[in-house]
Image (cartoon, rainbow, N blue to C red; front, top):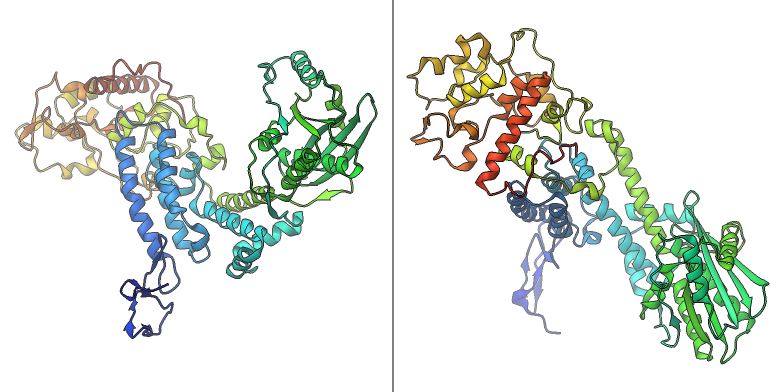
Length: 633
């Protein structure tokens, strides 16, 4: 193969020394410090910082498009945003993770977790100050560091089980002292060796596998109906010379799998029982062990000859589906042995039929096989660990380590729901009210925080993302303004500014109206309580507390037609863009906190605002806001 010198680059991995000069056919090769191989960018220091930076920039562009879709009135659902995030952002960040997981630093992994958490906050409508791992738990998204470690271990395990040159290469790249090597050593010491992978041949086409839909009978029907359908499927006009009834058993507490097979001869009620057991975490593994042991016993006894019929009855749909759809591919040695033994019997001229029967419905021979499989967990014949079970154990160990790290930090969400992720079916909800709160640029919505407590006074004061509401200051013991009076002053364009921020009035406001300018300081019942800065800093540490102000540029939408239109920066409020016409919900919170009647008034005001905003987009017929549930997400 000829090498194009002009398109060839070289990188010398070093820390302090200068890069040497490489020549090929008398021409000097270009020296690069950040080579890119198959989409992965490396650096001369054998780090991963450049690739992390490029992935972050690429993901932020995609998340910016997601924010435009999710933060609108007609925004997509949470589940849709989550699916798009998994397909477009998470998949790109997890690309080629077995190649870079060993060289990625904790800072690189934390950066990718923050990008993942931003997508989770967009999907669930969470505030920007929400903890990274709480956001991931709320959206049911795994951290990139956790997922990358699992994928790296999967690549290492599959390559090592294939043997040959692949096993030698992965052994040199992943030593036992590495993080992946230590995880594999812990699993093998606790559960034994892992079963190797082999290439299984294609299943013989003469083997008949009956479909598992018995006359449109489902598992929800009565046991008598399922028993009658199973007996009719087994009873054939040409009875089988031998019948194999297999069943498996799985105990999750001990990670033990066991299988049993009953061999019945034609016209006899007595049977031979073969029992096996092993380590595993799936019922499919136990069914494979039972079928493998039964076929091995039939072939060893040489009881079948040409022209005889063999019936294999099982209550495992997954096993029959795997055999029916099997093609020549790499699989476990146990499943490959089952396929080879079935092909060997079919090559002798034995007519093989696999039939599905319902379990635990009164079928006599299936019940006997079930009893034998439950008693087979202590037998001497044992099988090695399945590679999918090893992956399941690794996933549990990685998640357990992450959970122990999370338990060390106490947050409001973990105090309420623990460290369990939200189920995917609970991520689908109406985004209308949440999107309106997001449009108003507030850190509270009807699904969490202070507004959730105002609309639902009976809920616990400890919500998912906010602490208890701050206690009112003893200096501000004057009665609060009623909400009707608040709306009247908002319609007149009165500036509602706290006494501590009176000097920060907007410069562009006209000073021709003394009542409008001195409405807050001169009138006792218009005095706003000062902001509790310590509580705001504890709740949202990254954001500085903003000045509570309801200027004429932020009038409620309902007052645009009933009140005179003041001019702001050379134009009227009605001519302002839609994103400028937003009510000051933070100012409203100062008045509505602590009274049931005021919370009812705030709810009616919020729903009325939502209706009027919906009319602008033609949403009145599609959303009934009085019937939409408001609950904690």
